[in-house]
Length: 262
Image 1 (tube, rainbow, N blue to C red):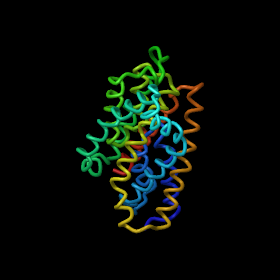
Image 2: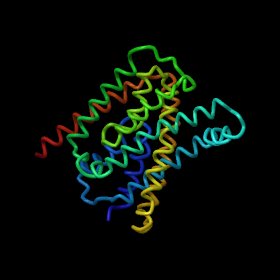
Image 3: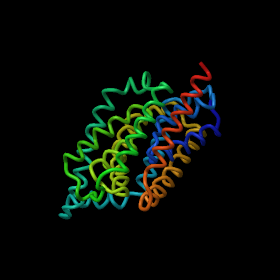
Image 4: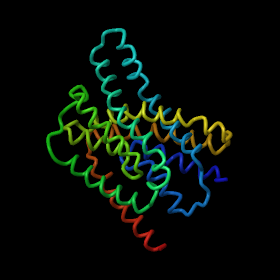
């Protein structure tokens, strides 16, 4: 059985990388691989980590979700429209996630594949953030925009792509300013993580509750909240370029380690 220390490390990794555009699924595979941890935490632990980041989202965005829910009865057209945009944006990811669930647990877990997607999406994020006018707000999003961003979110089933990285990159290409691109990405994450987490939650309970699950959940929730707050403050005055550089550098490290171990 993996240790409490390993559970906390993976919880921190999940919490930070779920919301920073660097790929949480990729890091959860690469960290044990780089450190040569032999124990496999298992699917139940992965589910619990995602429920931790879901808690972080609910804590931070509960007011926005309450206002969107109330808009269904109080006539707030702006919030109701945002709610519908989020529903539309969530559909592609839900469908593709179900269709490619098996592949995500097997053939998509290669460190070399992850290195490739890290570097490729890093370069695309850099380009999306650097070029073109980026003055549109969340309220300017159309339903076509939501579908396009939704399909980009679906690509995150491949480790190394990054759900937040893909959606933020696409939003930037569509001209959305940095903070609103992150906000829409995080709001989109709530239903997709909730759906996936609740769909698999029974596996965590069937596996039995352990201290490792509790520590992993807590670390994921706390550091997920820290990541949300920090990133939203950071991108108000800074670019996404450091994340693109980090992705490329990590990809180079992974390839170097892979070749050294071959």
